[in-house]
Amino acid sequence: MSMIPLCDPTSCVAAGCTATVCVGKGIANNHALYTRSAEAIPGGVNSSIRAFKSVGGEPYIVARGEGAHIFDVEGKRYIDLVQSYGAVILGHAHRAITSALVAAASDGTSFGAPTPREMKLAEAIRERVPSCERVRLMNSGTEATSTAVRLARGATGRKKIITFHGNFHGATDALLAAGGSGVATLGIPGTAGVPEEAVANTIVVPYNVVPEIGNDVAAVIVEPVAANMGVVAPAAGFLEGLRAACDKAGALLIFDEVISGFRLGLGGAQAKYDVRPDITCFGKVIGGGLPIGAIGGSRSVMEHLTPIGKVFHAGTLAGNPLATAAGLAALNELTPDVYMELSARARQLATILRDACASAGIVAQFPVVGTLVGAFFGNDIPTNFDEAKLTNEKMYATFFHAMLREGVAMAPGAYEALFVGVGHDDAVMQQLGEAAHRAAASAVRAQ
Image (tube, rainbow, N blue to C red):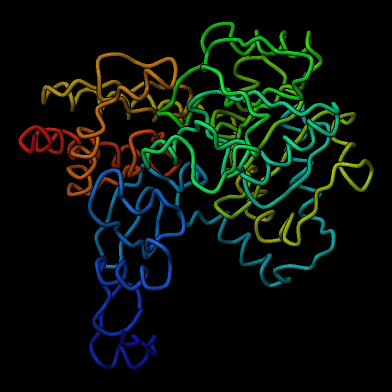
């Protein structure tokens, strides 16, 4: 294999290279970069769904983003409905975020010691989410869910965990049983490499049905809005029923709000549905687009964590200065008026996609929960994972590629949410509507 050297940008300019990204003369295109990536990275991607396995083809390679748009290395612009799977809410390269990052980076990028910004971000979360009397920061949503489970077991002295079909709680062995989103998109029920012993104490039950909870159950963990199977809303009384059942059994209730936290509103899903969990998992929005995670809960539960209690948690980069700076900047921008606007845009997006598909004769549903939009290619809006799996994945893939050709980027998987951000203004939405109608017509012709 011949090695492709990284080039000197100055010499590239002198040689007449006008590529958006300087990666070596003559290879600044999506296919070449994806091929090169596959020589260094398994499958060419660092998150499996990015490989387009479920929709076919090869991924575009992003060079930069601006507002509602991303640009690939070939210079093509896309209206972005992925928004880093919900982590970006203000739009790409928002001035408040970039300015905060520049200021933080100039002070240093990691210390392995407490900093004022991590304290302030924890305070900002606590002020906005009343159930979070104490907050512990970490590095990812996966770390948040795994720590929440460990904490629940340590606090209760019990082993079993109840989770729900189609809920995805990150790449934690004990929580990968029958998960949604990533594993569903890849068409696998779980994953190789997880022994039976790792899930022996995990009980998986149908979403939107309150289960029987025994006195050996440490916690029930749930996505209060199931955004990893295409956005499924909680049925009336479901979350309230979980709260009551957990209280009766002495189990803890964990809300996985990695997606819904600060996406649905300042208080997340628990504020929207007025149900208070014992532990909440956060990620995505609270990092302003940088890697982060957190858990919050009552003081009595959270103080089981070390160094006060006996449930171990530590991380070299936990509370990272850059991530906390970006997260603080994001939360400071998110006012009630912003959420009202985002909710309106989400409804507008759903209407655009529904009208485009209907005009082309495509049977599809686009449910909206607050600022989240789902996409199901079938007759009915699902209420659980079995119903969600009835979506026509082939039609989704066809529509996905048709939209991509029209300059609209959706998630390359039929079980993900669609996201709008502050950057999706009237002009962007008008362009999106025109593109969606052309894409729907093209998708029908391609069948």
